[in-house]
Length: 299
Image (cartoon, rainbow, N blue to C red):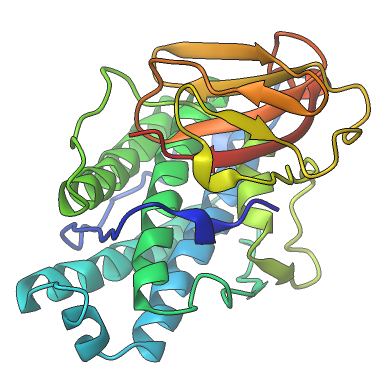
């Protein structure tokens, strides 16, 4: 799985603790999925899986690192308090999703066993990881939106994604980056999102495993050089077999760079958090993706 240890900047997130009043009555009647698709309840379970992970990430991180570790990074007391509010927000999202899913007559997925060892190498790495997690959270909700049947579920998800976006904007401000790097955010489908989440998951309780298969990871020789104009090199030029393009999923549209002898050039014009995949063609449909995504941060 892609490593968060390559995060480029000191980051932290800020958001108020917000309770989201998810509707329950009309969701029950609209759980059916299109043929071969995910039901609204499936999507709520997917959202809960992500929120469990984020909530536990902040809970464990704040238990591991004292305030003095964050102060040593240059964060003020107010900033540290705001950072802790992010974890409180994620915990509220969890409790509300639990109630909403239970109201449909479905057992909510339970928290998994997580491995945040790499993310908790030190406080600096923890807050850098927060930038990645919040960006992926925004992309996950955007990617799920077109799959939702119920307007109630869609409205509830929208009220969560706006908070996730506030997290991400404050992270970028804190790192000295442009808070609004592009006119659009980037959507990711469930399988791509789960690929990024799975790197932190050791195992899940019986009945709480999502029926989603993660893509293989991308292994790069020089992940820290993932900047426009730089050449990226795969650790093994022959893997994955059949890869023809590096796909860069970014705000404003996807870009594809030919993969030649395990090398591809990062395109110009990429901004914000960008998702890199290896594909068989100039498409990021699940059937065409061979590995990834990996998160790169060109700006």
